[in-house]
Length: 467
Image 1 (cartoon, rainbow, N blue to C red):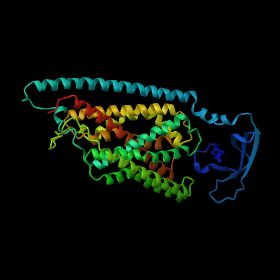
Image 2 (image 1 turned 90 degrees about the vertical axis):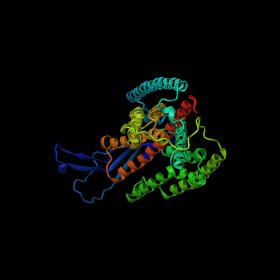
Image 3 (image 1 turned 180 degrees about the vertical axis):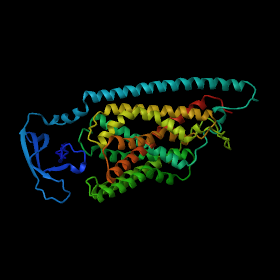
């Protein structure tokens, strides 16, 4: 329960097993007298504790209806503790030394992995690229009768625009918006807006900031779509608006219906839903359109260092591990391993009774995640181009975002091995909302992966002379 924004928890009954292994012989009792101890300072509540009267019991062993008279007692005591310090009791429980040690250990572990990985990739790519540049410069001086191979020789195809460019631009715009949203939320968290049990502050901030950042999605999506020589920018804008909101809204409708059917308090009241719909129609959508118009009028050209040939080259046959799915599995594993330990704490605070207050550590983990995603995508893009496969646009986006699938896989593990959830409502809520969060992750990290790959591809093709 909550009292004046302070959480309290206690047992509502007990099971007497009496040393009998058979559950049908156990006895079940319900407490009917609850005692609240409230500590106050002047006109402010500072602390609340709850316990039960062990003598006032109702036997529920027989499965039939029982009429129960419930009692409660409140005891008021004065305390010198000031109102400002009333939250310390709760935040200290998650800042205990052994918790912090685990966090810092996981951070240092991730940092070392990341440094090794990035150093390793950087040296390999630098050496390989240097050799490539030397070789290609040498080839140009030598006679041109030898067989062409490697990434240089697909320079006429590497900037050929991807298939489904409207969807690609929409995904890029939405990913950028979600990235901006995450960054703003972190800034608020580090400033200290989301103190423990400021319930609903995070949810409100998410809704409001999502609405305010929709202009970013419109601008990025439409300007990129126009750079890719797309004609139907209005359709692209509508697709951008619905790409994340659509699935989220459908999931929400389904889960809210489930909650209403179970008459649970998790169901959002009609008024709140109306407010959210109004925010979407009066803030989100107009900003999206404004961003889109600004993006269309930016009229920037796509910066390609090489001219694209008229007809695409044939892609040579590739081994199975060079196809999209194995590459996604490789790309998602490393970023996921960097955030794996922190995920447990977040899950325990969102879906359990833990309290999460260490936002600074979470921010470091987020930055590590971005760096690893960018690096691994760049490396895989290089190997893909070296194999003369020039369809890297979608591949880099999918590889960057593949961590989202790993996080969803972790949800399955958490549900079965770590949580005590059961029943249709809990299951559908858990997997429904986690699917939306992982989808947001996919779009955001996909955008990061693609931007890194684009920067890298432009850079290496600038450095060679293209006919």
